[in-house]
Length: 492
Image 1 (cartoon, one colour):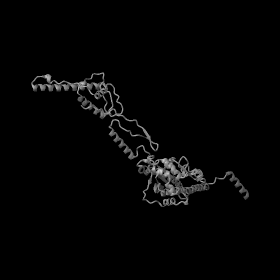
Image 2 (tube, one colour):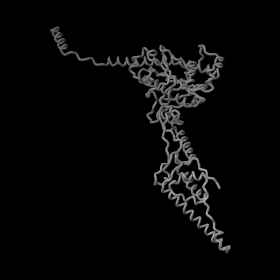
Image 3 (cartoon, rainbow, N blue to C red):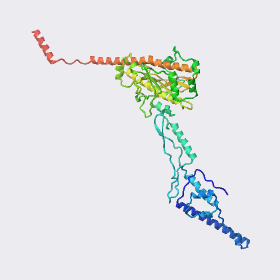
Image 4 (cartoon, helix red, strand yellow):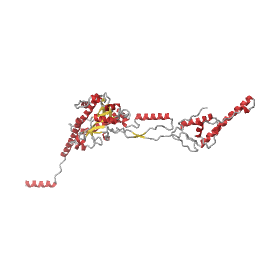
């Protein structure tokens, strides 16, 4: 005799009186059918033997005592207050019927919740789907999105897992999941391209004026720096190589590579400050560029960098201001990423951030050039609007330069790449960064100063020409009459 084993995932329920009566009636019918079959077999045996001894062929109906597993199982279904005629039924008949009920329940009632049934209602089919409460997570950009449910109540677990994986793959491929906009796989092809922002392949040549700036950045420096042996023995740098989070990467290179300008310096640096919306290039489409929030952004201190140009700056409003901290005409964007067990960085995402941030820097200077081009003075020329950016982790850095081409497109191209644990690469990377900062402090700042001075001088010339072209006011009639009388007296 096989022992019934209850499946662990079935919920224990109590059937209604209606189903209990159906169960008892079915058991009684099965009992009667069994007794009829056995009685017929007895009569056939008497006819064949011809002995007429019905008592010898009579089959005694046994009433075996159910094993404990069956008793505990039936207690969950039959109300003990009612009669129990199923004790007259063989175990295999009961099991056959109950297993058919159980398989049907497996198909339609997979729910983690307890089934609450009324006294007279049958078991509802397809109405026990449990929907887990929706929870929300915050993306990197601060946007909230609903989490995918861990399971779907009315479906088998395997199907629920497949649905979850399929949904995740679809939303991930289209960039519609709980990730930030710059993490979208189609961010470059759709959002950036819709606003004329592109990254150029490595094999494309740079324009002449951009090549000149790059050569300026690659110059050797006379200032002292760390030795190759110092870099090899740098324990903190080795820890970054083992894996570190973004804050650790930023803290290390802030001290080693990127200087912090003093309050009296002409340069200014802001960390993790959102750039103003009006600085971001836009073609008017609904596909927007993600608002840049650079980990580091170098620009100018307004009063220290442009002390003689304040009048012109006042007339221009806020178009030269990059953020709420008053940073002027930024030119250098740095984006950090962690990697390893303590940080899941992605330089592809950091490059997307550089594309938007550096294009915004270029766009601000292009607004200044637009003012210069409106001047009628042929001696006034637009200035170079190029800007630099870096996407880096604790082990690798990628240097980019951005500019505007054909008065329409914003391009970004790779300048160089650095393995930061190689002493030669580390020293070259440090040299490039310091040269970019010096370029921003010298040639670029002087170009902006001159442009502001040219705009101010042009405004003065226009005001003076307007004053000279004014018609003088008509003379006083009384004065004219007195002058005429005097002339008449002299004549007489």
